[in-house]
Image 1 (cartoon, rainbow, N blue to C red):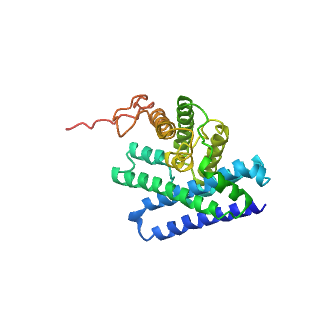
Image 2 (cartoon, rainbow, N blue to C red; image 1 turned 90 degrees about the vertical axis):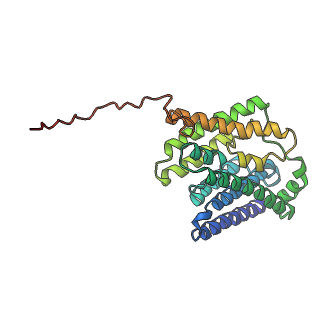
Length: 277
């Protein structure tokens, strides 16, 4: 249990960092894109530790699959509660841009902040493992250069898996976007956990370009191009298809609705014309 206690302390430290950034940004709303940096940092830093528990903890720390799935769900739930609208996901940020809900400058800054946060999360995780606080982390530190890639299928299969999972996720995300946070956040966390667990033998269903960059791009076994096609183009393709199916068009690209009629089903009463004497 010492390994799990150390991991919980690590998760709490990441949460405190994000909460601190969120409090400070209340005074400077212009720099709200920094919250995307913190959100992406928390995702990558915590998910790397979850990966460590999955890969090593089950036999070095006696942690079963039920523990790892529960930790992943709690982590996603906590991230949704704390970060709110800051998803830490470039795909969702670009979706807002395509929906005409965000200007190009804030979109570029947010995406850049998300990748920067992912890179920092990787650096912090590496330093944490180098401390070798437990046997699990000592083994992880020794094995870091030979980490296991999350892309366990061919590039076409990986692209199909990521785009399909992103399509499902974005359709449900759009459907829940106007629901109360008490309903939306737990359901999104549950969906992300389910998709990740279901696709663990394929791509792990990250559906997040910056998250995949921090988690698996540095692992040997595939080229940068293969990773980019699967984990960058895949989620973006699924997101655009989901937006097209949900809205009927992509507002930033097409002004006309391509799938659904704009005619209303019921016509309102006609106004009577006044006679001019």
